[in-house]
Length: 451
Figure 1 (spheres, rainbow, N blue to C red):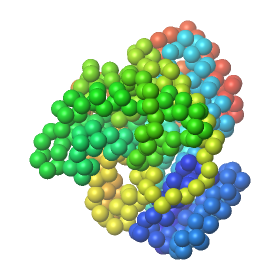
Figure 2 (figure 1 turned 90 degrees about the vertical axis):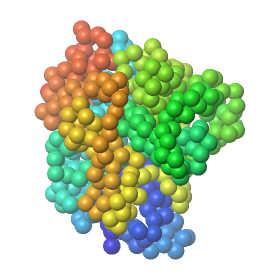
Figure 3 (figure 1 turned 90 degrees about the horizontal axis):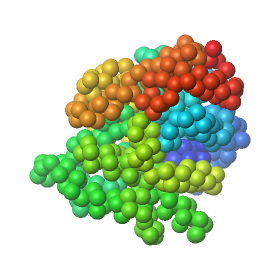
Figure 4 (figure 1 turned 180 degrees about the vertical axis):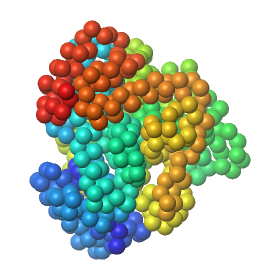
C-alpha cells in the first residue's frame, strides 16, 4: 500500500485538488492518505469531504487525519507540502506595500523582489522543521513542495538537507498546454515543447511539430500578438465576476473558460510579457504578476491595473471556494508519483530541482525549473540550452537566492540587508536597514529569529 502524507491538507484549493488527483489514479488505487494540518478545523472539514467522496464513489483508499506530523510520516512513500503561515493576505500586503513606502518599486511582492524575500524568511523555517522530521522518520520518501517562493524554498532546503529527495512543483507550465494548441491550430499531441528557467521566471525554450519535426517557434512568434493581445486578463475576469457574481477558476492544470468575457483591453495583464517576447524573442510562461517580480525595469513596463485586479480577484476568490473534490487532473504531482511507482520513464514538463548543470552558467546549487525524466529512481533533469539574453536575466538572481538561504540558516539580520542590496529591484540604499527592522517588528513572531 502506497502511503501519501499531505502537509497543509486543510487548504481548500490544495487539499481538494490533490485529493481529486489521487482518487482519479488507478496506480494509486487503495493508497493510504494522511491529512496533516496545524488547523484542526480545516483538517476536519477536508476529512469529512474526502470521506464522503470515497463512500459515494466506492473507492478503496484509506484516509486518516493525523495532527502529529512525526506519527503521520511513518512509512510514507510520498509527502506533499503546501503551507502558509499567519494571515496570508495581511502579511502579503506588508510584503508589497511597506517596501514601496521606502521607495522600492516592486510590481507585486510574493516570489521575487523584497516581498519575495520576506515571504521566504517567514515560510522557509517551518518548512525546514517539516523536512527535519521527514529526515528523522521517512528519509527515503519523495517530497513535493507547492509552497512559494518556490526557488528560494527549494534552494534553502537542499542546502540544509542535501540528501532529501525534495522536488518543487508548480502548475504555471500549464499555460503552454493551454495556449499552444489553439495558437498553432494543432492538436496537443502534435506539439512537443520544453521550457526552463527559474520558477515563475521561465520561458518556452523550444517547440516543434511532432509529425514533421519542424521548428514551431517561428509560428509562435508570428501568431502570438493576434492570440494574446485579444485574450482576457484579470481585469476583465474581475469585472465580469463582479457583474455576474460568478468566479472563474483560474488555477490548475488545463482549461480555463473565459469565452463569456468580452471588452478586452489589448494585451491585458501582458505588457511585460509582450516586451520580453519582442525584445528577447522568447515566450514567458507566466504573466506580469510573476515574471516582473525579478526584473528591475518591470515596474515601468507592467500593467499595474491588471496586477492590482489580479490581487483583488485572487483574494476574493480564495475566500469563496467551496471544498469540492472533482475527478480531474489539477496538478502534476500524481503523474510523477505514478511514474516513480511504475518506472515509466516519461518526461515531466517542469520540476524544480538543484541545477547540477541542467542550465549552463548557473551554479549547481541553485534550484531551477526544467523538464525531467521520471523513473523508479526519481526525477532526472534534462539539460536545456537557454539563450544568452534570458540567462542574463536569470543570473541576476544567483546572489539573492544565495543570501536568502544564508540569512535563514544563519538567522542573520545583516544577511537579510545584504540580500536586499543585491536585488536588482532595489534601487535605494539608505533606508534598507530601517526597512528590514520594520518588517522584523511587524511580522513578529515569524521573523523574531533574525538577529
